Image (cartoon, rainbow, N blue to C red; front, side, top):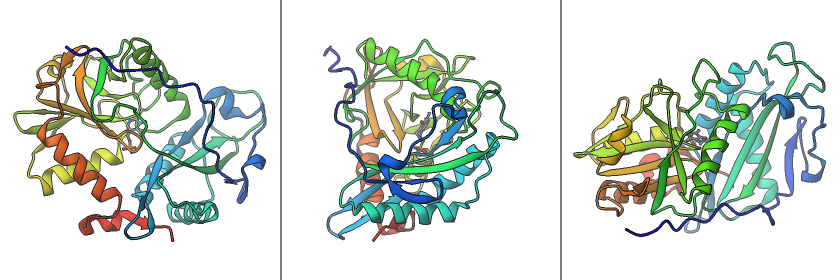
Length: 320
Ligand code: PMP
């Protein structure tokens, strides 16, 4: 059996640097987008965010933002959970995003990071009666997981935060401490990614992605009641599997041990895109190589996000 090819995520020496941010109601130079050390969100994790990708299509000379409205709809739900009232609708934020990207004049793949946060400067743990604000920046962006086509995952000893502790269906800043524990534990043990279980011991998701397994030609993914983020990629993939590939998709709890008997497994998310898991805790998934369903799905996914599939072009918002 091959040994894991993992290296730790590198310390961020040279981070790609945007020129601008949307901050306190306007587009400003990135150097001017700064919050106080007293900011509530910095202390208590009272922020929520989105992670959106835009893909450069060389043939069409166009940059397409993928499912941007759906991301902002979920973002507003996260704001609602945290009682952050923004003066923007989803469509307003789409327009702000397009405007900001045009300022940067990108002609490459990028990542978009909207953030809503409790901007109150002071002490006091609570959600109510605190001001909130919205900020946004963008970055050139490639792969999130180094090993996108042969990911070696392990089952984390950290359980997923429960809905009655910190709801995972919100993309809430504080809950990413849970993800960070799982990711670091996995990487420090020589794996690429963590698979996190619920308190009941069912499969929930990756540290920053949803998960599918394939058994006997059926794709299976945990339902939204298993403390997962309600992923937009998960929805995309479910639709493509069902409508375009004729693969049935079942949403049901997945037992821990199913990870060791499934034929295929993959993570999906805006960041990880579609990362095929070829080993779980040193055991091969299926025959230990990319399976046929994941392989076809990956090709279809990248065509769709890059604006090369007319059926789904309505999910791709052109920037220019
Ligand atoms: N779960 C978690 C915990 C995540 O951070 C992400 C990435 N946003 C996902 C799932 C996948 O969500 P999406 O497909 O909407 O990016």
